[in-house]
Structure formats: C-alpha cells, structure tokens
Image (cartoon, helix red, strand yellow):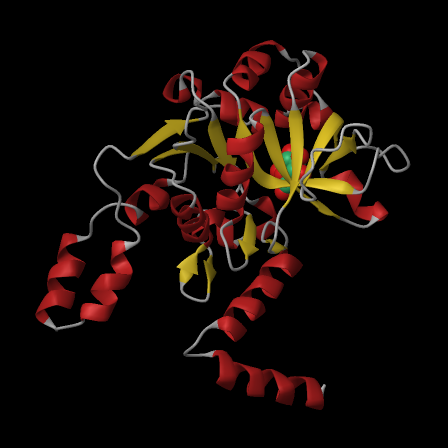
Length: 297
Ligand code: G1P
C-alpha cells in the first residue's frame, strides 16, 4: 500500500512585488477573488484531495495569513447574536482543527526549492503535496484530488502540467517527456527531464509545470544537495529533475480544469471576472454589466 498524501506545503513567503503597493500591507495570498482570498481556493482544493495537515512557509509581514485561519470569537458571537447563520457557515471553511496547521518561517528569500526545504522536518518520511496559491485552478474537480488519484496508481513524483505558447516557456519549469514510455493514462506522462525557466529556443517542450506537486520525501534529500539554479535561487524543479537522474519516476499530469495565473495582474483580473461570472448571486448582473462595458468601449 502506498502512503497516503496527507500533508501539503504552501510556500507563501514571496514578497508579491508585482502587486505593489497593495502587497506592502496585505500578503498577496490574502488578495481576494470575489469574496475569498487566493489562499482559501488552495485550501479548499487541498481538502477535497484529502489533505489533513497544512504547512505554510511564511516570512515577515505575513501575519494576516495566521489571523485568517484563526478563530474570530468576537465576530462569531456578533453574527450568532444577529442570527446571521449563513455568514457563520461561510466562516467555517477558514477554521482549522487545532494542530492541523503549521507555520514555518523562511528567513531568507532563496527560492521555491529552499522554501519547500524549510518544511522538511514537518514532512518527515512521507509523500507530500506542494501547492502554489498564485495558481488558481477552477474546475469540476480539485486538481490536487485528480493528481492524488493518479499518484495512487503510479507512485513516484508528479507535477501538474499544461501547454503554454513557446514564448511563455521562459516563465515556467518545462517538462521533457519520455515518449518511449507511455503510461496508459492519457493525462499522465513520464518525464525524462525538467528545466526551470529555459532560455528561448532551449525549452524541451511547451508543457509547463503548474503549481501543484506530489513529491516523494527523497526530493527533500535532493534539496539538501543541489546548488543554486535559474535566477540564482534554489529551484524545486532541479530537485525533482534530480529524481530522474536517480532512476526514480517523475510524471507530468495534464489536469482537467482552467488555471489562472494570479501572480500576474492580467491573470488575476481574468480570474476575478471568471469567478464573478460563475457566482450564483452576482453572475447574471455582472454579465449584463460586462456586455454594456464592451458595447460602449
Ligand atoms: C514557480 C516554479 C515554476 C513553475 C511556476 C508555476 O515559478 O519555479 O517551475 O512553472 O511556479 O506557477 P514562479 O512562478 O514562482 O517564478
């Protein structure tokens, strides 16, 4: 029996400079799509995948995240007194069972690989998920749940992947697929290499890594050893690629769903529009409003 994936690491230490000045005071992960912060979307997706322990790798200036997942007794008492049961219900998804959430500080900004490595003692000798809350994935089924299901069959390490245009590959980790080793599952591809942010013309494919990972504990060992990579940072991509060199399987999983890059202003706006349109209370009115805006443009 394979070990269950019950722990997820959420690297949230980044400074969010692309959203300054907003992120001077508000962590980027608390920025809101309609009525929920980005991080809530990732937590909901993780819960649907069976994750029980949530490990946040934070940094200075991220206290709002800890408050967000804490109880809010005054607020709850007031809502109860006012009979606002629906709002009370909404707050429930922000509450964590005691001991289910942990915060680790990344003291120096040394890259995504380093941030993940900071959580090594909490992960121990189990497979674990990594979720980047900037990548919001909408769909009928949690992307991580799809991956956990595939992982239960395949084992190994797995990254979510999707096709991007050749001009975009330089912004992502990019997979080199082993065509000679089909998995029998259309969504699952065995990788023979992975490159972080390849120079134009050097990308092995246009399959980009998206911020959902299921990793074996050995990836933490690799993170212990690898040096700095692209952008002079410790790269998670390099530690996963090292698995392939050690004859351990690495897979790309083409998830079902639409991914929004909420780390960029354009992607964040697209997500806001999409989630507003999909919202049962707001959708119809907002659609009419958008039609008017476009017609008058
Ligand atoms: C990170 C990873 C990269 C991945 C991307 C997905 O990059 O290093 O491999 O493709 O997330 O969003 P970042 O966007 O933090 O530069």
